[in-house]
Amino acid sequence: MCIGIPMQVIEVDGRFALCEGRGERRRINTALVGDVAPGDWLLVFLDDAREAIDADRAAEVNVALDLVLGAMQGADLSGGIDFALPSQMSPEQMRALTGA
Image 1: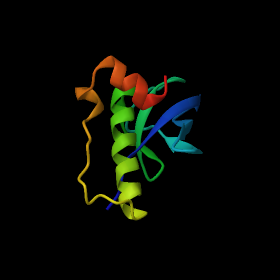
Image 2: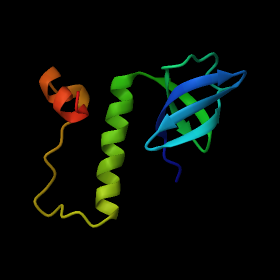
Image 3: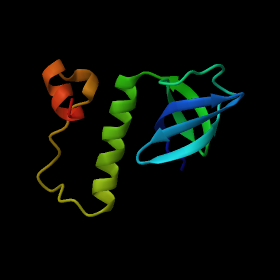
Image 4: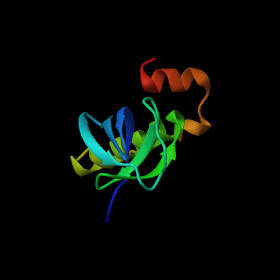
């Protein structure tokens, strides 16, 4: 299975972009998504951008990936997960989630 990672464009070089996400920087092929600019968000699979996304969607995917990582690291989920997608949260809840 391949998991998409949200990454933000730092700089562009032709059909490639230097992107940053989840603590790493990588050179990403952007041929499938067209023109990108610094600040844009991309959903990246195996160093290829497959979809241009907005910051809200990037935050949603990152929260889901954090939950998966927690489960893989043995987090106690026996009490259930009190989780709502960020798209369903109030602006105050989103600020708390993102640390803004």
